[in-house]
Image (cartoon, rainbow, N blue to C red; front, side, top):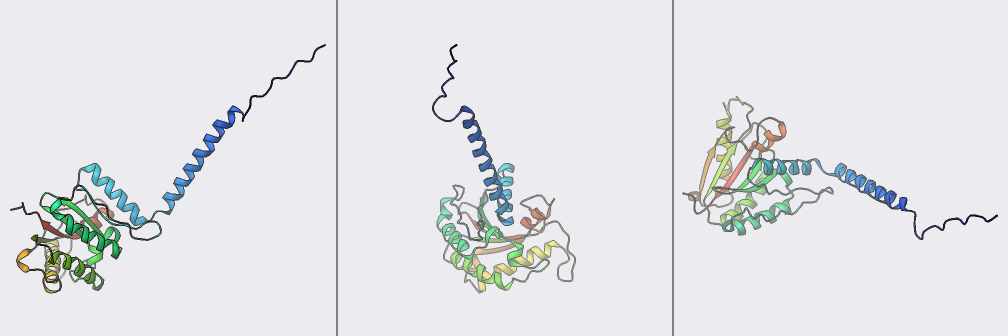
Length: 235
């Protein structure tokens, strides 16, 4: 009787090990991704979500500094949407804002009239107030000094969300938005030394939102003061 010779195993690991290794690697990548998402800051998540919504809706491109998961300021990115005539002042402002670490409280974007520096209400004012917060004055002064060395005309525009207001000082959002724009304008003249002939102040109440007033997150974006640098081609 002859014993049947057993098959020799091919060199290397069994074939099933390749599939198993791929599966383990994919699982590892999946859990790393979950960990990264769990450690992202709320403010950074809101910024990413807002940027995606703006891109999908065709809104102006948003450039805003943020915080990384460790809480450090993130650099602003140079956008091709920023007109070359604003590039120098943009770079100065973005460097200053990154240094201040103001995060998603400031957005910079281009529109047909020029370049907009948009400040959220919470960084400048208490809710329902038009008085500049003490911590806002240093930031606005630094922005104003940069703008004072520039030569573009400037429009300061106040905006609110759609929540009504009725106080002794502000019967409606018209008065509130206009008063905020005026106070910022006066500060830029008196403290930053900007030539008043370059400035104008306007309040739009809730009627020029940049996001639908259908959530508190969007209302926060709409409650803002915009400093608009007018393009030289704007008449």
